[in-house]
Image (cartoon, rainbow, N blue to C red; front, side, top):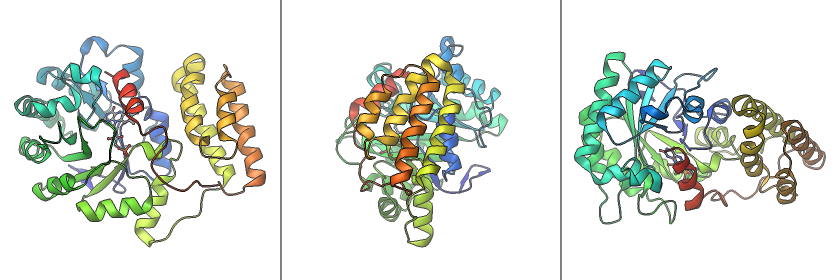
Length: 355
Ligand SMILES: Cc1cc2nc3c(=O)[nH]c(=O)nc-3n(C[C@H](O)[C@H](O)[C@H](O)COP(=O)(O)O)c2cc1C
């Protein structure tokens, strides 16, 4: 699997999720099998580049190549500038966001709202490709199936993007109108795949190895991208890789290993955000990690009252040590859609924060 000249170790990607896929989480997913990870979106608004939020997002220290940065905006020249700015800070792939349904972004006509204005969407793609080409940096595009059920224009837009020089297209099988409701459909993803020569990535509702195989078969896609199902379960990447390669399931991870991954993730998280924000923003990751485990709900409620990183880390460690005594292998819930994380609010709220 290639993006332009860049070879990837495999064809299983972690989706960009604002407020979730920061550098520590991307690195965790990469270490557990994901072959590629895209940053949370970075605004094209120059006045915000120096903000703490944007500088954190532009921090790629220690991240394995290729560094891929997603940019969001509505103005072709600004988007081209944003691409150059991120390339100067280490980006090796620039991804254009036309998939985000958040109102804050859509009111500004960015994200998936751009799908409604094909000439502007194409002008943005052309400007970003022109900015990246001299540096040899490939440009990719992430989109939905269309603006609404009556206007599924993904194939037309993907063709225009390919003609403009885009190296890969990812399609989330929902329209903008759907937000995160309903089910992802894969017919439109298959139609995009059939229409293009460049690699096409299928995304939406892939939450198990079986579903991964089904989506690959249904779409013929070159790669799969997984978002919400990796929240609290980043080892899903190696589970899916193993299943696609052998047709067999890996056993659940050892509970002490899960503890070690989470503790290491928390160290990295606190390192990026510091004590005050770190302890608070880590709660969602811990909550996702324990949500389906025995005693997980009450642990989460207690943990949400903890206000310092040392106590939080100790509590997490104790919880998993106690669990490991009773369950050497992690008790796995029946795999299914991600509860709580799969609703419109979670997605759009966090995405809106990024605008
Ligand atoms: C919390 C959250 C934040 C997201 N942020 C972004 C983003 O910054 N850029 C983007 O292109 N998509 C974003 N998405 C959409 C995901 O990349 C993905 O397309 C979507 O969640 C469907 O995949 P899934 O069913 O595997 O989660 C976000 C989704 C969630 C749930």
